[in-house]
Image (cartoon, rainbow, N blue to C red; front, side):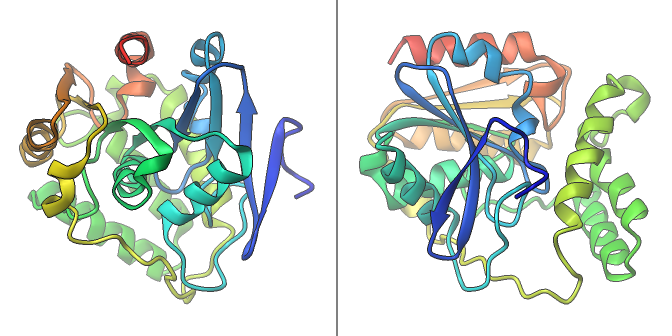
Length: 272
């Protein structure tokens, strides 16, 4: 794509080109971004990791510079195809929010390609937020998108940075600014009447105990109690799991407290 950054490469999947960054050298680490953004979400992690690892950062199908879906697809299958194309498995797979779900989907569906898993702001695809704040926010997403109110949708989207118990005034303004920019780029690739072709991986909780690689969950302490409890459950039900909490932040600890997040991630990697 003509507007893609110069360092982006493309994997020719059967349903269009998928964009990815591939930098550094060493054992492979995959970084999977949150929903509606792209590989640039990881700008506070890539330099720290690339000093010692091969860092692969895809744009998930329908996001960033990757092709939209024209037929049914699964996130895990796209990632598996990319890792095979790059001869980069087994890799440590790290994901935030949507990316965290992709990480657990991939270890469940393609275990031979995954060396370890780190999830943040997510557990498995079976988890659903049930707290009233998230329920209202998701309704606002649907209302604004349905009305074609992109600015209204972006306003709602960045509220997740602060979460229920803070306002955006408490957050580094660079974070919501950048997230708005990335989300606008992705949402502009789609139309309100576009069918959702994603096929979700289901029945994940029953298979979690079979995950035989190390799992680290990292979540902001301001996340809802049901997510934190689900992360603890995930870490408890796998044979080799650990749950960590970054206090004072919400859904994106990698952006709000990058030094602390990077230290946890690098410590986990060095222990493998």
